[in-house]
Structure formats: structure tokens, C-alpha cells
Length: 134
Image 1 (cartoon, rainbow, N blue to C red):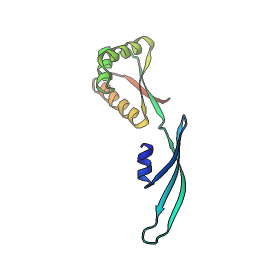
Image 2 (cartoon, rainbow, N blue to C red):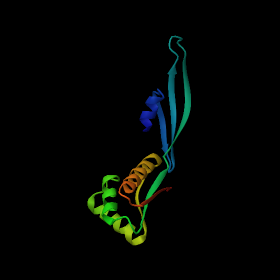
Image 3 (cartoon, helix red, strand yellow):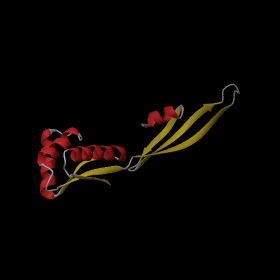
Image 4 (cartoon, rainbow, N blue to C red):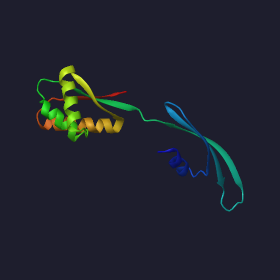
């Protein structure tokens, strides 16, 4: 959610300043909230902290049974890698024993890992895929 969407969600009319830091954003907001029908207007000051979602690395591990072609296919289909990038990542997994194939939020990382693992099991491969925090 962007700062402006957050302000709209909170029904705020004015945003005084937005401060961005490395791990979070602090929004200093001045809002005019009118109580309908009473003629009384109040001004409140709110501070909303928005944290960036934690990122997770999806790591493929090499084994002696999963074919290189299948790994490249999974990288293309599940992770949306172009053919050349998929081949380079597959070779990195093969040569170095493991490789980070993508960095995603928790839900996306776990979903992609689960789909790729299910594809491997359906084909009878023991491909190991792990998600770890960045």
C-alpha cells in the first residue's frame, strides 16, 4: 500500500510530511476529521509506521537424480526466468551445489517453492528447495 493509498484508507485530508528510512516509512499526518451534524471539527495528529515486508530467498540444492533440463524447466515455468537465465542458474546449482533462484515475500516464496517441489515429486525427482529469510 502506498502512502497516498494509506491516507485515503484512513480518510485523511492532509499529509504534512513523509519520512523514509531504510527499514520503514514514517508518515506524519495532519487530518481534519469533522463530526457530521455536530458542527464540531477536530484536528488530530497520527503517526503511521509502514514496514517493508521481510524478504525470503528461494534456494535450489543440487542432487544426483534431478535432471538439469527439469531444473531449467521449473525455473522458467514457476519462477518466470528467461531461458538463458534459467540455464545459467541451473548450471550454478549444478557446479556450486546450490543457488538462490529468487527473493520474494514470504507468501510468494513459499508458494513458488511448494509448486516447484510438487512438480518435482510428480516427475519422481528429489529436488530440494528451501526458503530462508534474507
